[in-house]
Length: 28
Figure 1 (cartoon, rainbow, N blue to C red):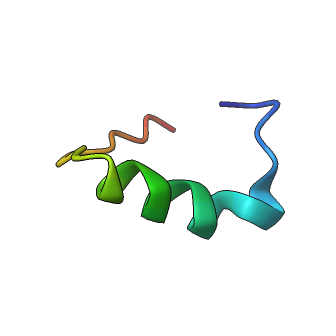
Figure 2 (cartoon, one colour):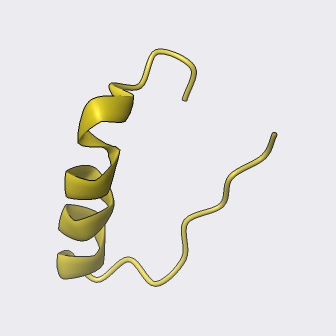
């Protein structure tokens, strides 16, 4: 996750939700 492009994080989460992902886990 560290090398993630945080400027596109919203778009990526929306794409995951559209693909059927029902949970995203963030460990900080």
